[in-house]
Length: 152
Image (tube, rainbow, N blue to C red):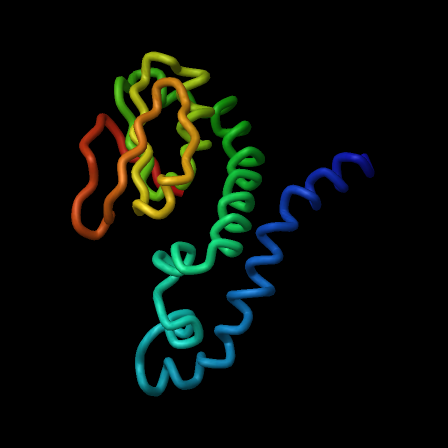
């Protein structure tokens, strides 16, 4: 229906804004990155894509909105079809942002202890959710232990 398409487009607008506003600029550095090494995003913005949201509050807000909207679209179907969460007592979402994914999972499976793991500048804005603990850190250094790790 037209209403469904409009709703879908509205949910994806923040994500498209990010791609157009930040990531397409990186193409200008692609040739230099290939010849001289490095990552185009890092060359354009002076930092890597993981740290950049901590330096640009507007980008961080739009990025978080985009991830929540995307998660809402995708996870609904995953929770309907996938039954593997039933056997878990703990689940670590690495790069879990504001914890929205774990909130949806632990709402359906309240026996799961959710650990939302992301960079400190990300989780400082995360709202409290029942059954979800927010932990700050760097996935390249260590990751909290759990029965399973979720990454998207």
